[in-house]
Structure formats: structure tokens, C-alpha cells
Length: 373
Image 1 (cartoon, rainbow, N blue to C red):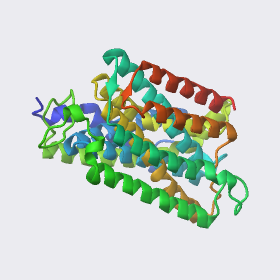
Image 2: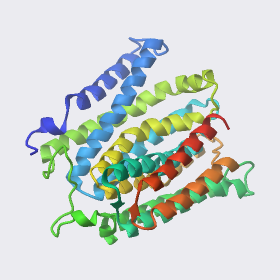
Image 3: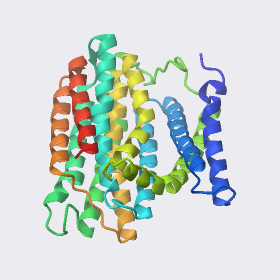
Image 4: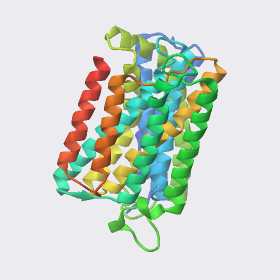
């Protein structure tokens, strides 16, 4: 049973953001050199630790709130981190800075729908043979995701008001607003109007819908623990934002040294940001709670587009910077294939290892095309 804040707040989850904050103070005070290799490596390690810490505290708060509010909080926290990394690279003005938002959002969708969902279905199916989830919620989320993906990543290739795969200022503002509205409507439906569609039906009780987590048993974290985790979540997010700003030039150089295309920066950002949440989704699948995994995966992908596109649209207008959104023909093929296969996978309410294997194959091809266009 959960009876102490030590269970909710492991030592590393508050040490990591504090060390990251300390390093930032030393860097901004010019006590340590910003371009020293050892400092950059330490900053990279602390960035990853701060990301994991932020997601952990978001998970604790999610447990306090219950489903589906918990999945929404996790998705928003992850999206804040993603936006911070994207904006830091856009502001730096390096190679491909106008494309980093597109590359990161596309990579996030592919990683979530193919990598995370694929691993969840394979690992969960291997242990539980066949798993179930709410068909109404999954199909609704997929409809929203498909619409957002087409508007943000495909349609810019065919508009005529701006040169290249881009929207004109009026168009990008309109699409950003529509994306934000569609995300808001989805959250309203998920949390209020049709909340039952997004809950694990076999585990619902008539009084409340709670997350059953192996770390806490059946007990939610106390108000004190939730308050501490909220504060540490904010500290972690601020540390991630500032560390991302300091590391963005080095990330560009590292990708160039490895001989990878500049678009691979988006894959790195999306992978770092989504790794903790991906692990949480796989854990839920292993506990035969596939509904939680689906909520996390689809909710993250929707938030990645619905919240990121409006934010980067505003940044691009403020900086008077071109924002490239349209993806290549090869990536359009992969996106359409992913949405088609996801429709089949999530169209029955039941999954097996086979569906997971199909998604993982598409994920492997995505990585190949990203590294070797």
C-alpha cells in the first residue's frame, strides 16, 4: 500500500532536476565553459534525466487525477518538452531550422503509432495472447489524428499561396487555430462528454475510474505528494527547456558529423521526448491494461500536432521565419500506410502479436528512410 511520499518521489526524480538547475546556473554565470565537451556531455545526461523525471512526476499526478485525465496530463507534459526542443532549434537558426517542427512532429507520430503501439501489442500479446480496448475511443482518436496529420503534414504540399511545402501566414494561423480547436474538442469528449469510451471497461467501478498501478496498489498519492510532484514537474520542465536551448547547436553539429540528414534531428528529439512515455505505455500493456496504452499513444500523437503546430506557427511569425510543414512523397506514403494499418489494428477492439509486428516493420522502414533518404 502507498503510505509515504518516498514511494511517489524516488531520490533520483528530485536530484536530477536540481542538478540540471545547478548546471544551468553555473553555465549562465559563466563559471563553467558552455562549449566544453565534458560540460556538453553532462548537460546531455542531465537533459535525459530531467525528461524522465518530468514524466515520472506527471505519472504521479496522472495517478492522482485518474483516467483519462492522467493520460491527457502526460501528453501535455511531453508536448511541452517537445515544443521547447523545437523552438530552441528554430531560434538557433541552424541548418534545417525551418523544417525541425515538421520533422519532429512527423517523427513523433511515426514513433507513437508504429514504435510504441507496435511494442505494446507485441509485448502485451506475447504475455496475454489477446488484448481488448474500447473501440469507440480508439476510432475517435484516430479520426482526429488522421485529420490533424493531413492538415499539418500533407496539405501544405499542394497549396499555391506560398512557395514550397509551406502555408502562407494566413493559412498557417488558420490551420494552427483549427488544430488547437480540434485538440480541445477531443479533450472535452475524452474527459466529459464521452469519458466512458476511453476507460478500461473491465476495470471500471461505479463510483470512480482510477488507475491501478503496481507501484501504488489501489491507493492514489496524497495531496502532499501530488503538490510536491507538481513543483518538481515544473522545475524539470524549465530545466529541459533551458538545457535544450544550450544543447541545440551541438545537436546539429553531431548529426552533421555522423553523416545523417538534418531531418534526423527531429527523430532524435521525438525519441528522447517519447521514450519515458513509451516505457509507461509498454508497462501498461504488460499489465493487460491496453486501454491505458492506447490512451497514452494516441493522446500523445494528437497533442504533438494539435499543440505543437499552433505554437511553432506563432514562433515562426514572430521571428519572420519560413515554416516548412509538408513532408516528402516517401514520408507521405509511410504516413498514409501507418494511418491505414492503424485503422485496421484499432478497428476491432482486439489485438494480437501479428498487428504489433506489422507496426514494428513500418517503424523499421521509417528509421531506414530517415537515416538514408
